[in-house]
Length: 400
Image (cartoon, rainbow, N blue to C red; front, side, top):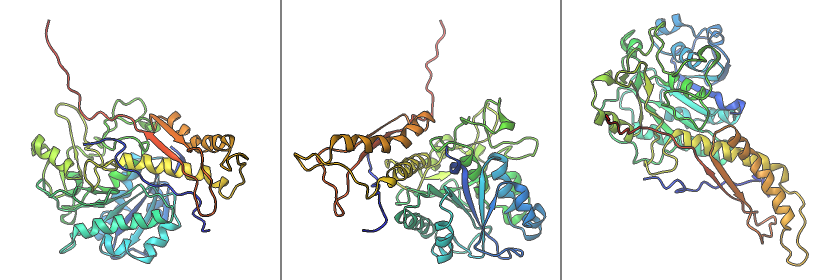
């Protein structure tokens, strides 16, 4: 026998659709042709912006090299001050060349606490095949999953994307999201920034939320200490002049777009930012992924919940792998008491998620009449009930 121990199979269709400490651990991979004196393709664990500055990745370096690295890091910690960011500076020009490399696989096999990765190009790559980039990201996630490493997703910088962008929902990349949100104030600082997308901001907005929260929620469940008491949690920071407005990565102001155009971008699988008419602040539209919208895994929060539940169940049951359990002497099958004990063990991580308001309910059942051995696994049937996310209120209002 190998050392797999517990096999979790992903089931589709259960939704009938037409925080542990590591929940806030993210990684940022940034393409930099001249990475100072830092070793490329090495993980630098950051717990603050000051730690990045100590490595030489300061605002002056961004300006001198006409890159965005310090900025993405600063956005992460501005929005998720209690998060952890694992920085990788690479000389590889594309996500495909990075994620297909042996170095990338080794890095993230050694950093299994990372929940999501953001990839930044820092330049408009000539003749970039975005579909190939997306597929390479998903294959990388699949390879890690085969090793029982649960990566919730990859945020890919989609540069220079217009409002007429083609749909990416025809792909099978359920854990890849395309970021086209842009802060015009940053894009205007240098011509080389004009097509950037705000991957650092998206990583921060995910790290500050629970796994089950929508990336575009107007408020969040647990705010950082400095923001407690505020009614909302926007991208906007008026004092710093950040996110006073929003654009797509080709520079199109979102305020100039129609509602139909905005809905189409979401339906086509892009993360962008915008505002509500007459309501202060800039927010994200959500976390669509590059798979059919009918899929249970077409949103980032659903992937996060599934991965957390799967990892919790696996870790709970692993101590019982190759364990000894009594059989019913009359039938030769597992005793009911043995089944009950195992069910209770498997339910513990799900109960913790329920108490933390990350799920609405769960069911875990081990069917009776099983006779597990070294060739036959013990089957466990599990369902998790997600919470409802309200995207729109329709109010009937009349005068009397």
